[in-house]
Length: 603
Image (cartoon, rainbow, N blue to C red):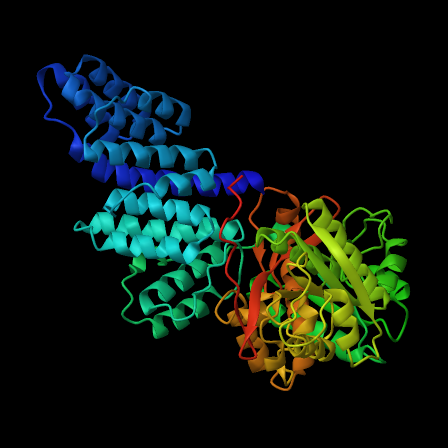
């Protein structure tokens, strides 16, 4: 995966640099001729795309030029070295730039230093250098956008290139600028950037962000490209994006070798777990029918409530299935793993317990609260909050979530300064919160100084009670993080959760991403489905999508699959992990929670 991300970043970098240096820098060269034949040769080589040769020609020109022209030639050489992907040579060229510098040369020197920092993956250093550049010409705006995309400030990067577009008169340059927008969004999304439009975004910015996501998602394997494009064109009929950006965009074809012959789906479809099993089945079938008929394997569904999971698995093998999806509970998955012998590829819909040997051709996919707790720990650190308190229920679920959060938070350098657990039957959290936060609950009292946040594991009813009682105790200003379990999209009273920050799947909190067409299918095919099980419907949808994607994802150097439950990747043990979007409840509804101000540098 890292190799793929480097390729994505480098392709965007070269496109941006080629446009900004080719269009802008050469115009600043002194009049050429005579002793400046080397510079004339460098210009020609640059136009032909031989940037390393051009860099050497400009360096030759700088060495023989009159003093007044040397800095300009050294700057031109540095720009060409960057286009040739040699940041060290570019830095060496800039070392020859000497005072005094004109205002234009000073500006260009600082901009090229910024580009060198970007080329080395030091986004923080690039952002610091960029703050020293005044004004916004076309070249600076392109560099500014690259820094913003590299910092995962996707909307800001797009806004910079929209402003740059207004400075370009040539149609080819404007089309190249539009490609920078789309490629910048794609590269940032690959690294987990949030490309959702911010609240109140103007239609041009919002349209670019959505279009960029459609293209990026489709290239990464998402379904529904044409439906999403049609919807986009209906909502943004006057958008300036050129049709050439999406013309011919098609869903990635599935190779016949990646398709199983027959798939067995093992779920509880009767008994106490029937509602959950049916929701997963319906989501699975939604994706099955969203795929083209040419890429559908045969499907057999087994009710594991009618017979146990191991018996259902053995029957599935006897029936000729070469791919098995399921079962659903951790205990059933552990039992099935003792039988799996590699005759069929298996995608279990839960994780094996730690320490259990993973069979060959055995994959695991789960909506894991522990994974969400780890995501929360990493996000809290990224938000700059290094100490806090936790509150979880007295249950196996609560203990697992607490352990996962505490371990990940400590590994990231954070400190849980206090912890409490509550009885699942309680409704009064006041005394517990006052002890945990060391507050009297009286007006004017403040939570303990060493608590920069509170992390809560709770189902919706308890989450609303805890949030309400934090307000009652004058502690609502303390940032409250949680897992997605706290939010029920179909529930009432979500306004009581206002202020809570949590990760969740795109299906729940992203109205226009890769999950949009999947939700449309669900609403059309399953209009009476129970909203309480929406996340399990999405889980089933992605389970089918993984059937044809597992081989690619297991390779380790591919782009994440933009699923409706998150951006999906597979680790070396066959576990599917989800990267989620972040939201904060405002007015009872989730709104995007912005990326940290200081995003980690690209790697």
